[in-house]
Amino acid sequence: MNKTRIEITVVGRDHEGVVAGFTNFIFQKGGNIEKINQNVIRGLFGMYLESSFTQKINIKKFNQEVEQLAKNLKMEVNVHHEATLRKRVAILVTKESHCLQAILDARTKNQLKGEIIVIIGTENTLAPIAKRAKIPFVLVKDADQSKSEERILAITKQYDIDLIVLARYMRILSPNFVWRYPNRIINIHPSLLPAFPGAFAYMQAYERGAKIVGCTAHYVTEDLDQGPIIFQDAFAIDSDETVESLKNKGQRIEAKTLLEAVKMHLEGRLEVYWGKVHVKPKRSR
Image (cartoon, rainbow, N blue to C red; front, top):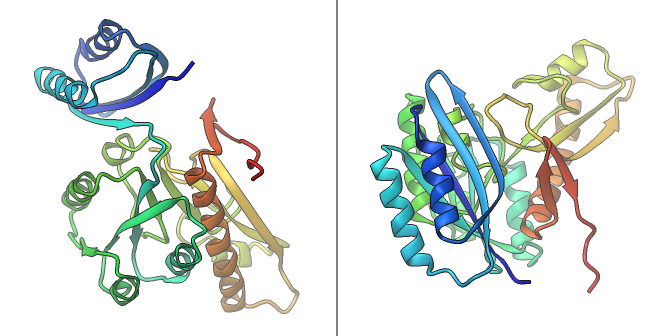
C-alpha cells in the first residue's frame, strides 16, 4: 500500500496543549503517527512527529492548516514531505576546503542523488570554490550565534533544504536549530566517537599516544558530538608521526567519510531508531 509520509517539527516555548494539538490534527486528517519525539531544554520545547497517510493529501492545504495551527499555539513549525525527487542540500563551511571539495567532486561526477543548492560560510575563504562550481555562496558571519542561526534558518527555508551538511563548520548549533532538522544534519568529527570530542581531536590523539585514529560522520543532536553514528573510518599511526602529518592523513579520510555518509542519506539507505543508525543494503541495478 502506497503511503504519503509527512514529517513535522515544532519548536517554541514550552506550554500545555502543543502535543495534543498536533497529534489530534493528524488523526483528524486520517493519518497515522509512526514516530514522535519530544524534548524540553531550559523552557524550549521541540517535537518531531512522523506521520503517514494512505489517502491522497492536498499538500498545499495541509501546509496552510499546519501553519495556522502552529500560529494558534504560538509555535514555529517545519513540514517535510517525503518525495522521490532529488534531495536539496545546503553545505555549511568555515575555512577548511577538503570536505567541501570532495562533495563537489562527487557532484561533478554525478555520484550524488541530490542537488547542492547553496553553500553557507562563516567567512569568505571558500567563496571562490562555490563560484567555480556555480553554486550560490552566502556569508553569515554574525558573532551572535542566535542571530547567525536565525539567518541560516531563513536561508534554508528560502531554498527549501532537505539536508544540511556540516563540512568542517566550526560552530556549535543550538537545540533551537537542530530540532528543526531531525536526522537531516550530518557532521564530520575528527575522531572515532565517542572518544576525543571537541575541536582538537587530533591533538588529543597525539598527546595520548593513540595507536589508531579516525573520524566519524554522524547526525547532529542537541548533545555535542553524541548524535547517531552513520559511518566511520580509521588509520594506524606511524611511530614517526607528527601532529601535522596526522592532521593531513585525517583530513583525507574526513572528506571520504563525510561523502560516504551524505551519499547513503541521499540514497535513502539510512534509518534511525533507538538512537542508532541502521543502514539498508545498496540496491543492485
